[in-house]
Length: 488
Ligand code: BG6
Image (cartoon, rainbow, N blue to C red; front, side, top):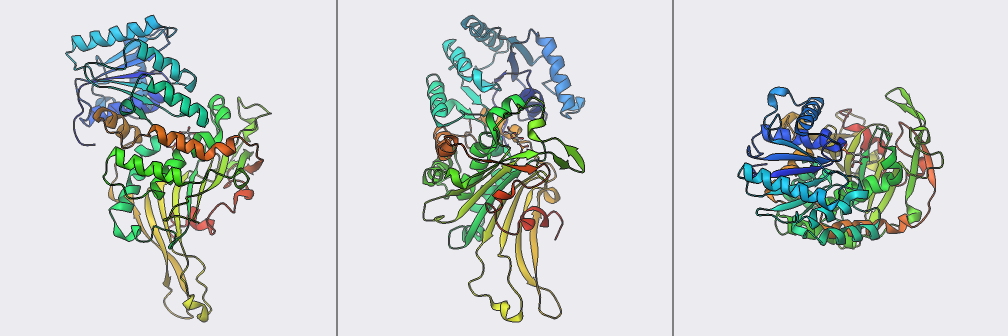
């Protein structure tokens, strides 16, 4: 986040919806406050409700207050820069009216015609909206035109290929910003710095030294009020295909030739191409049953509001991935995610191979755990390297200690993922956005699983997933889940 963006209009489709209120408007407000959003910028919310500009301005004020943006920090988003356009039934005349409105706004405020269209919309209306924009000539302008697409990006390989084809009818790849908000997280961006700005890690980052990698994204929340979306999606489509697969590519990719979008995407796509499509038999799917979270009883998935008793949707997936290349051949990457788990925790664990000779065994001391690097993405972001030291005194004893770094101790303010990503769109930087080929290659990995019916194992809410998935994890799971936060 460096320079001041060019003046532009951020057009948010679904501008009155949940994503806009909770994430997009607060992120734009923070960018305005920090001086990154050009003060000549405008924001146009588009939705079907019969609202006017004043109605939307009130909605925005309430949303910013609810998101914790203090009123004195609201610059730009407090007044005349906010606009609302009702899109009616979304017919050609409605999109023409939008085009005219944008043109008039640009004329009145002498703007250069830079437009970012953010589709914060349900997937069913992606294509009709893109077509509406294209047919109204809103795929180009006197300045730049960019379109931002939220996940889910397709629901399988065929639908993702088709969606890419539809979007490419109007917009070329350089105009398309596919958001995976995990890529905007500072700690995720730091993965590349950790790997490529330090020699210590790169020298062990291979099959000779690494025994296994585990990528965990655990949530204590349940399905909440999103039953309609989630029950059609499930953990594989909601989390594994996008967020966890992105983390996986960043851990496994080769060093890019430059820190720029094309070079990084090229390496990420290469990893996906080298990865074996999953074996459905090796994957474990689970679904939470009633249990307790933080001492409070919570219902099972089937008893959540809006979930049908006949639902077959998983809330947990454990999947092993194997990269068939020289660096990683034979090293399992365990991807695990679930809702209603023990606690919120996103973490990458890299377990190194044990020492080749167990020197201290002769002293009755077993080197039980190999060295390990834990990269904690959230909460309590940072990393820790775990290794053995001698416990002072006798009898001879070793103990596992962490060498750690915590973001909070060094950098108290970390920008929200959406702030970074919304600004990157304005700056035309696609480094943290997902390329069409990446989406398709990622769906290709999970295609065999989506085509097969596999068992669904129960796990009580508040636990770490079904026991059937225990083997899809690095052993010593207490080390991976607890040790650092307990300061052990
Ligand atoms: C979203 C998923 O993409 O990511 C949600 O749809 C999930 O189901 C969320 O809760 C997790 O994001 P974060 O940033 O809270 O880890």
